[in-house]
Image 1 (cartoon, one colour):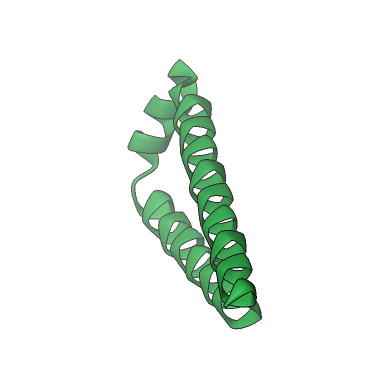
Image 2: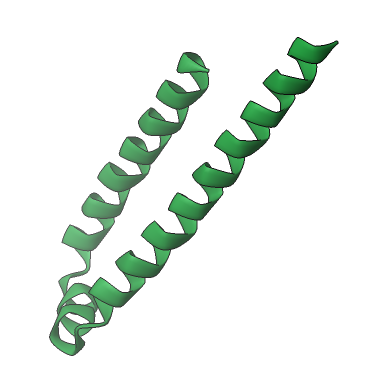
Length: 71
């Protein structure tokens, strides 16, 4: 479980660093999203989706562990 969590964290960090380098090369898109306030909406929606996904994965992991324990 620790390996899976660390892999996911490192994948997200890598994605964030790539996204920052792309954003620096195209400041017009960043300015447009920031000026309209839409960037925070996008970030919020992504965080909600990711939180739900991780909560689902944790619940499935717990159910599987419980089933394995019973057998």
